[in-house]
Image (cartoon, rainbow, N blue to C red; front, side, top):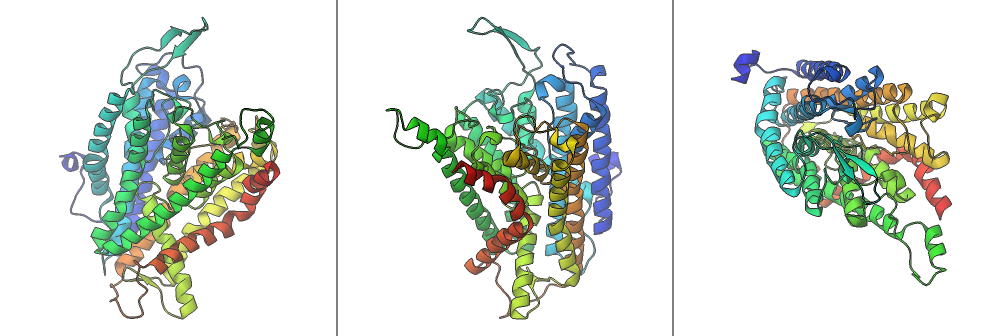
Length: 525
C-alpha cells in the first residue's frame, strides 16, 4: 500500500550511484523539514513559552536538524528548556526512526554487494527503507516503549509540575512523551535525551533493569546484523568471528575504564588515607551515577561510546583521564564494536579488508574476503573511508584550539583536559555518536557549524565509499575457496582484525591521545 501511495516500484533495483543519491537526498529533505519545524515550533501545539527558555537560533536549529538526520543526535541544548512536546515527537522522534532506517538500508545494500555476483544492482533504497521501518524499528520500539512505561518512564502530555522541595524551595519537574523517544533513540542507535542529562535522569532511566534494558536495545540490532551478514552470504562462521572480535574489544575497554574509575584519583586517596576512614583507594564517584554505581555507569559508557549512541547515564567529563580516554579511543576507532545501524557492520568489515590487504602484500598473494577480491579499485574506496575520520576530527580540533572562537567553548577546563573536551566533541560528531564532555559549551556559531560539518562527513563521507565498494564487489564473480585462501573464521584471522584496528587507530590518533588523556593521566599519577 505504501509503495502504491508513494509511487515506489519494488521490482526496480538501483546501482550504487542511484542508491547513494537516494540516501543523501532523503537525509537532506529530512534535515530541511526538521529545521523548519524547530524554527517554527512556537506555532505548533504543546509549546509552553514559560519553560522554553533557550531560544532556537538559526545555527542551533541547523545543527540539531543535521544532528538528528544523521543519527548523531548531538545536543547543544537542554531538551526540557528548548524543545516542545510537538518538536520532540514530530521532529526528533520521527527523525530517529527515519535516519535509523536509512542506516539499516545502507547496511543491507553493503551485504548485498558481498553476497551477489556479476551485477551492478544493490537493491532499492525506498523498499529497504520501508522494510526497516515497518518490520524492524516500529514493532520493536513499540514493545520497548511499553517495557519502559512499565518501569516508570513517563508517557503523557501533562504540563510541567511545580513541586515543593524538602528545603522549602520550588522545583519545576518536566514530564512529557518520554517513552516514545527513549525507546527508538536506543534501538535506532541515535541517542539524544528528552532531558538535558539524558539517561542519568530518573524519568529516562528509572531503575537498574531499565538501565540494562536500554543497553540491550542499543546493541541488539548491530549485533544481529552480523547474523544477517552470515545468512545472506552463506558465511555464518565468518560473521561469528567478527562478533567475537567485537566482544573482545568491548570487554577490554570495559575492564580498562572500570579499573580506572574504581581506583579513582590517587591524590584524593592519599588525602583520605590520613584519616581512619580507609586505607585503600577511593573510587571516582564524581560524574558516575550513584543509583547504578561505577559498574553500571562504566558499562553504559562503554556501550554508548562503542555503539554510536550518545545515551549516557553519567558525566564522562568527570571520569578519570584513563576512564574517559577509553571512551574517546572507542570513538576514534570508528565504533567498530557493534556501532550504529549498518555502520558497525561495514566498519568492522573494512578493518578486516585492510588487514587482509596488508597480509596479502606480505605473502605475495591477492587478498580476498568472502570470495571477493580486494584489488586496487576496492582498496582505494577502503582508504577513502579510513582517512575521512582523521582528516575531519584532527583538522577541526586543530582549528578549535588555534582560534579564539574555539577556545571560548572551554568554560571550565583548559590544558590537557580542555584539549580532550574539544577532541571528544569532533570525534563524537564524526562518529555520529552525540555524547560529549559537558565542560565544553558547544552552543555557539563556531561549534554549531563545525560539528554539523563533521556530522555530515561522518554520515555521507563514509556511506558513499561503502556503497561504491559494495557496487564493486557485486560486479565481481565469486572466487572459489582454495588452499591459498586465508580463512575468515580462524583465531589467527581474529588476531589480524584486532591488530589492524589498533594499528590503524594508533597511527591516526596516537599523538592526539598523548596530548590529551595520556598526559593528563601521567600528571595525575
